[in-house]
Picture 1: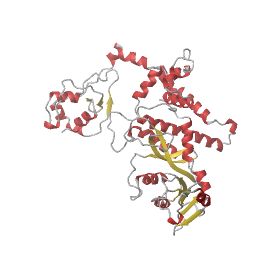
Picture 2: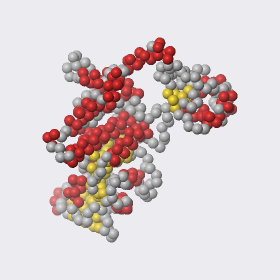
Picture 3: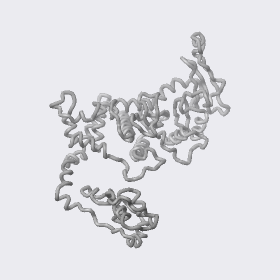
Picture 4: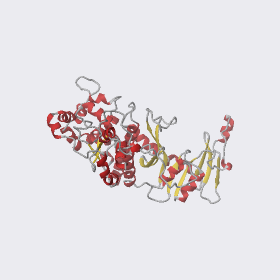
Length: 463
């Protein structure tokens, strides 16, 4: 795992159209090929391709919950969110905006994005400060209940969930016109959070008295430039303003009580943009690579965010330790050192000592086949099912892998039982095929082997 991630970090520094070019022989290829990559990944590109094909974060034998579209990558996202919040204390001014994980393949919940260079992909609402992604929530992930505000939209409920994550009260959150509305700022004030940003004029609570229309002629535009209109709510909590620059710009804020928010907005709103810039400049999959699996895109996005956050933490440590700037690592040097450490770590060394070709030879040899035998378990008959009713339907049952040398070498015991015995009336559907499917996993408590989760459920719940 370290080695594969290290190769992706290295590809962000020296991108190639296809990872196979990194594994070509440098003696026969003038442009591509590197012996260090070949030495770091035994088995070459074949092993790299096998890893990309068979690597899973969640157990693929489990059914995905219908209400969790990002379930396949949920564990690393949760770890990233928790560590990002624990290792960093945000300052007073943070920004709220979306980050885009670009994906060119097909996916049912992919967002159509025309206003970002990254293009279509998966949007995540993020709170950032000077490039550090403090917390995030993907658009298609359901908002946890209970909702902060029942009258709010899904977008604003997600954002209210995010703004409660910082550790201190009265943070100042800067946002763009997608998020800004009068009611949203009022809800944030109830949570002891100040917010401000540019606002759209339609249905966002901008007072009519500060509205400015865009001039149509050049003469009207020259006369309108510099026009400022301001207003304040009766409770003095929200300040509204409009400024005519090249076109009218409207603001809603609970941070200011004077018309001096433009300069601060321009300097404080760019936290998410800096995070995108730092992640994109050395992105792991380069500007060309396409991912066949959508969750690889989200996984690499999370890894990129983790690397950028680590670099920001490193810079902060250097500043607190008064390390001279000449002795600090640049972003390029930081990623290069990270790639080297990942590809030459201890776990990479253990992997190199037992390459995949040796494991294949051992699995097919007579010695391995004589040792790795399928364990004997419960013999399924109507009588054994009746006598083991309490054992099957109560207690905790854990999945158990079949030894690799005999995997797919034995039939599913439950399907084999269904093909022989009519048991339970209509509760057990008779198996049509004469040859039962092969087993993939078993129950550690009952010592019964199954081909699918459905067979597991039928066996443990049938009376």
